[in-house]
Structure formats: structure tokens, C-alpha cells
Image 1: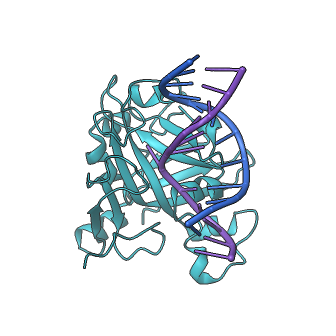
Image 2: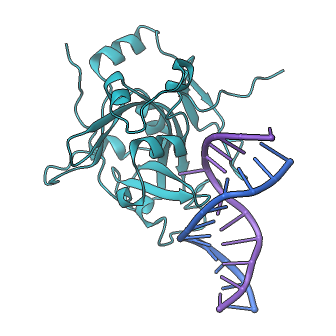
Length: 217
DNA sequence: GGTAGGATTACG
DNA sequence: GTAATCCTACCT
């Protein structure tokens, strides 16, 4: 039985952000520490951004901070938000076009839960929400601006990668195709502009998702 | 050189 | 509702 899947490729990333974003659900973020400790998180929530969208950091053109999202696909874009938290993105689409997918939530696997320093002496109900939010996932996985503009896709020459993304496992894909996983598409969170675009995706019924769609009434 | 505000979060 | 906390981007 396959427990790990191959790394994503730059070609796979080089598609529209709103195509990559739902495809990233079910993929895994792997965080490798020098000492050998490894954390793995199943991606359960994503948002797409691109330069012609007013919610995108690249909307007003390329700046030093956002330069990486205008570059080739497959790289990380990590930025500091509110002076406190970091957010992790995967750069998508063609070189020269600013776009990225924000990873909003992951579900840590069982082994990873054993491997986080301030151990989860939390209630079981809280444990699966340790990485339920873009700031929380970076915090718990030790991701910060040192990880900005790093390749997250296959990079043969990379000596000691600290962070990468693997595809859905066959088992996950099978369960998805069997209808046991459902993706919800809805609007993005926390924006002052572009709130109407339905460019957020998350796994239905997943407790690790940051926020559910606002219930209509 | 000055400053408004942010793809967040936890707590009241 | 609001504080925490630090850049970034933009203005003078």
C-alpha cells in the first residue's frame, strides 16, 4: 500500500490558480527539519489569487515583496501578516503572470502530532484544529519568511529541502473518486476587495478547515 | 522620513 | 469587538 506520493511538478503548478487550488486539496505539505524531524499535513483548504483580481497582492503590480508570485510556478510565497503570522502560498500559472494559491489549512497526520514540540495536551477536539488557518499552519509547521521563494515542486538539485508538496495518494484519490470526499467551492476569507469571487475550496465535513461557508438563510 | 493598514488569531 | 505587532507600499 502506498503511503507517500510523488512530489508535485512545476508543470502541474503552471496552471491557473483556480485550477491548481482545488487540485491541491488532498495533497500533503512536508516540512523537514535538519535534525530529521518531519511534519506532514494534508491540505484541506485553499484559496486562489491572481493579478487581475483585486484581492491579490499582485493586483497593483510587482513589488519587492510580491515579486515571487510573478515568477515561475512551483515556488513558495511566504509573507508576514499583521506582524504576527505567516501565510504560505504556492506560486502558479505562467512566468510573468502574478498568481498563487494560499494554503489555508492542513490536517496533521498522527505521526506529526507526536512530533510537535509543545505537545498536544489539548482536548481531542482541539488537536485536529492545530493547523486550521493559514497563520496557525505556518506556526505549527515552523514556516516563516526563510521559506519564501523556495521551490515546493520537484527540484533534483536541491540539497536539503525544508519544505515540499506531494500529490494525493492513490488511496486518497480513490476515496475522492468514490465520493467519500467532497470539495466545497465558496468565497474567500478576510478580504476587503474581491470578496465575491468563489475562489476558496475546502473539504466538506473536515474538522481541520478554518471556517465553513457562511450558511445562507 | 512618516504612516495606514493588512489573504490572522485568541480572547472577552 | 479588539488588541497584538511589524512590515510593506505609498506619500511627502
